[in-house]
Length: 199
Image 1 (tube, rainbow, N blue to C red):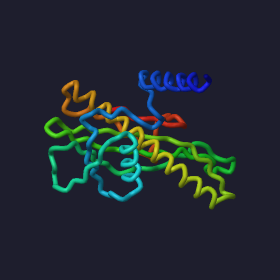
Image 2 (cartoon, helix red, strand yellow; image 1 turned 180 degrees about the vertical axis):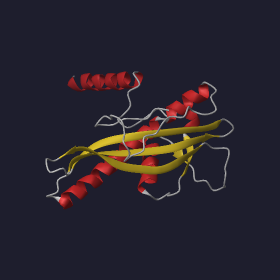
Image 3 (tube, helix red, strand yellow; image 1 turned 45 degrees about the vertical axis):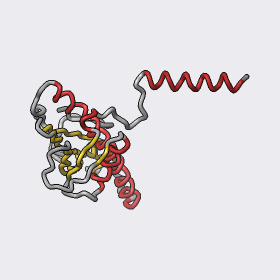
């Protein structure tokens, strides 16, 4: 008697979560016209390209190799460079840096055949405490933070594909340009967790 009731509750939970649009963390409802993409990058085997490809596959996007140059029948995601930098957030009494704000900016373009070019970008911020007494641990921690920032930025970049779909519906040939912060230069107030430059 107990098993049919448990089975009923499990089936009910599945139906409710499917009906309300629930998706696992890190997934996005990628528009159908972007479910098949060519990923173009200057460093196809670099960490950024690998991370973005992984995020696209998690979101059920089929990645097609561009066997023909300038192929025009499939949308293309052109990845720009990964720009990283840091700004001093706080200092010790001695005047040396105690905390940094790490910044990572990713830019890309989505080329839709016969419809236009849509630039997208995202910026992620993280805080990093500089401990001069633990140099090796500090380097390892910064590497982990950089990987995590790249992961978050790739997730946000894939989410930006929704803005491309919205711009296409509104018959816009390109998305409006936005000011992209340059890491290392005097940036305005930024959150310590993450932020996105909307386009």
